[in-house]
Structures are given as structure tokens and as C-alpha cells.
Image (cartoon, rainbow, N blue to C red; front, side, top):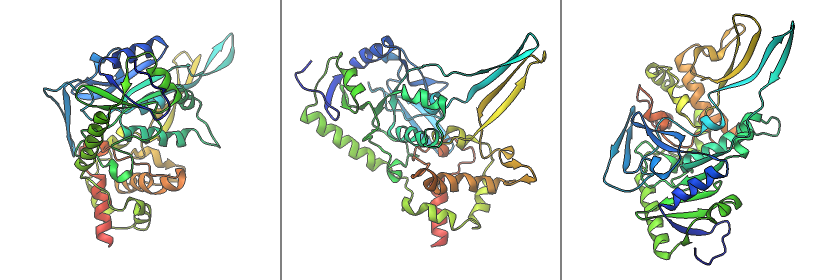
Length: 374
């Protein structure tokens, strides 16, 4: 271990095998380590116990309605871009019991679900997904309301970002200012080179993490190689949203444009885009009672603004057509979200493009509306 005072912003290098030691140390201190793993021919976010659980030697290929993993002859662990999964499911679970009530001796007793003091260590978070977590912070941790489930899990989460050197053709993070390199909001940031990880420390927790592993100060050569790779990565991202800062006004001033009819005719209202999106947060509650009538509970479940029932209310449905639901999704995601939370709800990860069976491309829809109204 080199002689060097570690501070927030320090850059060091570690042998790749030291990530194994880091994972082990996290597990020994009570963290559930989560990372990208290969499951059913896609990359999923799932528990890992060691370095070998990561998808070494794999890369990915994504296009509209298409995702494939490929096994290559390389020794890198983080080349493959994420599949349909995101870290959202750990902080904002798809199903959560809010409370339940049980009848005992002729009277009812209510029990509020107390969130477990669970500690997650997210290993391999992409910069766009880190931006998505920070966006969801604004949704669930506000001055006027704090979600106890999300806030507890978020407070205990430790984040190891991996800068994106091999983006998919569906990525457009450069347009949204979220990648391919993370700058803040992480505990540790990793850049994977051929033989080592270049590590940037982002928090006091990150300093503590690297104290017990072997590391060296990052050499000028490694820093130059990493900088060149990040520059090439940004150049590979050719999908763009033109003038992203003007998109809210573009969308909200053209709500009756014929383009909405065209995309509404192609959209299947299948909800795929909202379920794979790392920032979407629509939810519903389900009440259930057992057949004996002595136990009932309320469960929060993920929902989607593409579901017909989501906009149902007394007097009728306010978004009865696929066109109106698609318009609601896009104008909220990239329009009114800015007014609500101070930034766009889109991070440019491209998942909605990859997992849309109708091959609808959000960047093309925005750009075509701009072209049609210019």
C-alpha cells in the first residue's frame, strides 16, 4: 500500500483482483452486495458474492427492440451495458406491504410495516443510473414528504460507479448531461482498464473502503489512458436529442400536433418503457383480505401511466386513448418533470428504446416534433 493521504477526489489504481477483496469486506460489514450478473441472456442487477459473479468477457449489442449479449475474448468485467433491470427495484421495490391488520380475540390490531435496516452496496452502477437514483431522491425525499421505505434504503446504500467505456448505440446520455463519466454522487468511481481499475474516491465512506485493500497512486500513464478512453466513449454516442434545454417548451406548446396521432398508432400501451425506466415512479395500492376474513393488508405495487386504469376516476377516464397516454408519459418525462423536480426525468439510458416491441425511439419522437414545427 503506497504512502499517500487519501481524500475525497483522490485517484488510485488497484489490481482487478482487489475488487474481490472489496466485495468480501463489504459483505463482512453487513452489506448485501449487488452487481450486474448474466441471467437469461440479459444483464440483471442481482446479489453477488465474489468477482467471478460479474459478467467477465461479455459485451452487449442494443438497438430498437433488440438486445443481445456476446461473449468475447477479453478480461473486462463491465463492458456489457445494463439490460431491462435497474437499481430502482432495490430502493423502490416493485411490491411492498405497507401495513396489515389481523383479528385476534374478536378485535382488530393494525401493524405498520417497519422497514428493515438493510444495507445495499451497488457495484457497477452506470453514470446514467446514478443520475436516475439522484432524480428519484427528489421524488421520494422531499421537504413536504419523505417516503420511509425509500429513504431508509437510500441512506444505507453505498454506490460504486463504473464509468461507461463501451456505450450501446441506443445510449444518449451525452444529450442529457448524465454520462458517460460520473462526476459526483458516488462513494467510489471505477474506470476499468485492461489490467487495473482506476478508482476515484467520492466520499468518506469510499476512503474507508479502500483502506484495507492494496492500492497505488494513479500513475500519469493510467490517467492519460482513462481520459482517452472516456473521450472515445463520448464520441461513440451518436444518438442525440437536439437542444435538450428547449424540449419542455417544445412538447408543451405542441400538445395537439398530428405527430401524437402517428406515434399513438404504433404504441402498444404495453408499459415496457415505464417498467424498464430507472426514474419512473407510478404506483398503485392493492387491498387484499384472506378467505377467513381475519387478515387484511395493503400493498404498494408498481404501476404505469400507460395502463388504462391509471387515469380512471369518478366521471370517466381522463386519458382513454393510447395517444393520450403516450403524450402524458413523454411530456411529463421530458417536460413538466423539469417544473416539478428541477431537471428532466430522462437520463438517456436508452432502455425504453431497446425494450419497446414497437421500436419507438424517444429521441426520434422529440427530434421529429422539432423538425415538424420548425
